[in-house]
Length: 219
Image (tube, rainbow, N blue to C red; front, side, top):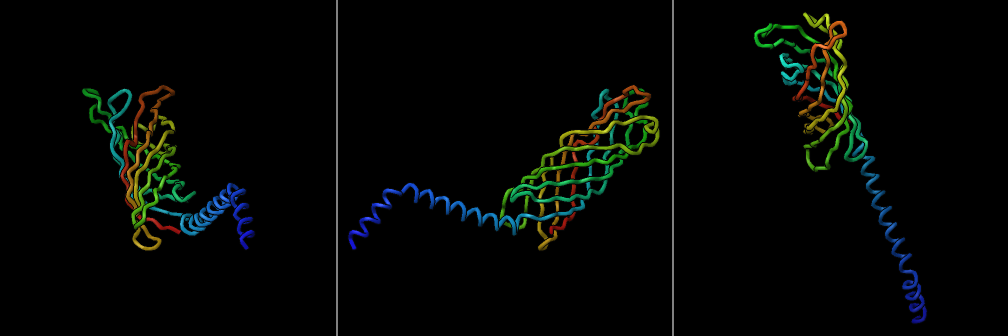
């Protein structure tokens, strides 16, 4: 009997590295399997939201002298989780902005008209895992905006599409199992050129900041 235990001990000592590697791989596979089960069951879902969006006003233009007023609109969005902490969101809305000329002494306060645009945002979101009913997130992506309607003096001008980065910071608050309340602060670098007969008149910054609140459904 002692000889048998001695032989077993020698084999363990001789192949201890292989045994340790095998044990380590088993643990890794076991943990990965548990994480995969948790990921499949809890982390893959769709979320649809509708937010009320208030965008800020802006007087940033080149040359100076134009004022873009704030806008109130609705923004539907759809998001899909990619991993436990990452998600991809697509949102779109229709905005209407009044634009005035603020050039001192020359048409100061003159209403130039309004523009309607469609901002489209594709956002990658990072969602830190936090237990509880509040889920914060940080999003970074791209914005593409199309100008599709004009009025007043702006009706005879051309406005170029805008393209640039987009950033969002928000949180989802669970109200029920699948129903949530959403708060979001977003920013993008939407700029457009105002042209008349091919000549550039000005470059406008439309959306410096936007505040949103709404509801969502997760499934």
